[in-house]
Length: 84
Image (cartoon, rainbow, N blue to C red; front, side, top):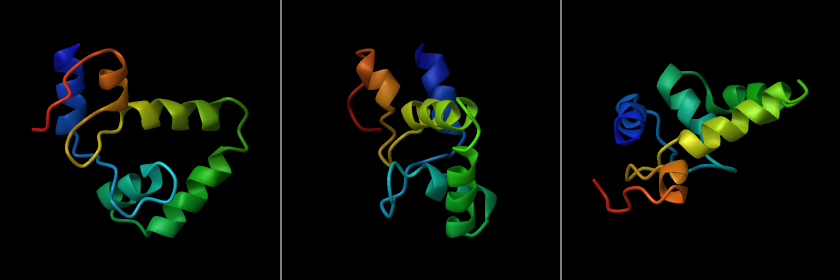
């Protein structure tokens, strides 16, 4: 599992310090170069899709690393806790 989580870290997606809820919209905006509010609006619109919108958001939420590289799912499974 460590290789899986390390590959997620290499993507460069990180929850920013200026997040509104979980930081997913801000992270996607930073990676894509789009306006953060435009991305947040698109994420909210995706919630209109039953299961897919909220389900995808939850999956991204548990897999998106914090600024220090910690991944919530990895921590929940008892994985690495120290900073990189």
